[in-house]
Image: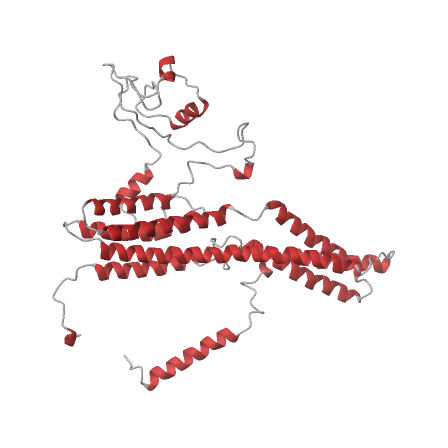
Length: 415
């Protein structure tokens, strides 16, 4: 290994700095892969072709030109709309970046508090602590998939993070079996089966109607009277899958594109956070952490939940549809009028001006549409995979450093 004062090390650092400065000074004007050209070239080409058709019509047919004074009035209004659109989209992008910074920072703090603040007393405490640390990383990974609309846990980056008990419970989370009731009809709703039909249970609860007997309909949900006349303790049974939220006479404001399927969109980060909370509560009940440390850990967990809620707000609150439609219509109205106002120019110049103007205006609108949801897979979205991988290495190192060291620790002089 070369010393920091050696000529080889100094030369390598000089070359690396030179390369970095060269990359920073390189203009990005010729970068087409990451630009908006790949998503706007079709409408830009169409508008340039339209300008050529206008020139051809006015060359061989009757000339119908518009006054140039029309352009400034429309340009001012259109400019204000585009500025507001781009600023709003970038605010959402930047807010998403800040929220993910909070998620990473609070994950580090929570991991540190668990490693330092929770004492290992029993022989199984170290294993449970490692499991809790991996739950923290699994929470971050689950947030990434949740924001992208990816359901389930069958992803490679979940491997080694979630224990088998959690995966088993998640796999069977929609299966509810009532083992306390036999198949003789002694069920909360008078059903003959020991398994409750979740969809029927949900419909009966919401509509207030049941297909059972009168005594069953009048009995509280989840309660039952056994053969001895003793009323069982009140229990609450959830349906196998929550009912879908669709447009009905009682929900007329729900559009088709806003229908929510309750059984598909499971909030996995919330369930993972519950597992972390169980570990923290168990450690507190066994007096393995100080009260102040318990308060710090709860604050970190609340901050992680708040950051997730902020990310959900970005995903679930798009730019209003009427504003987006009106902006697109304004852009194309301007581009449709522009060739008729500059017909006194050279025919080639008319097409060129239309092409450049369409590239600028449609490009600004396209950029705003692309970055308003920064949690996807596009090259201009936030690198969530990189964030998770970096945090994985950091938490892995924290977990290893906080674990007991096997063997004899050498003295400082022997290092």
